[in-house]
Image (tube, one colour):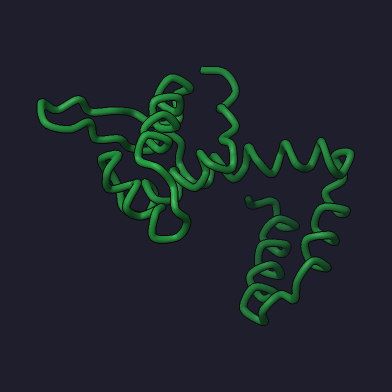
Length: 127
């Protein structure tokens, strides 16, 4: 399999629901998204059909309802999006990306502690 498909913003919203809920019908995804932002059922259905064609979700075609499931793990989707952002917006500079992320909003003490731990592990040769 080649490069992972890069989800759009709307597709990411659907993937977030599937990651949180697990396998779901279009109606269940629609209800979850509609609670946040009014979106038509047929719009969600069309997005999920396109996502199925792109390989972002799988579909179990039971006799009563199609049940969709995220095929792309959350971490893999995040890595794909960060790699794309790194190249497009920061000319491949990891330090520019991290500095911009840290300057865009105040990190919590817990987040800073986690960042320090990740850096220490990275310096020790672990990922």
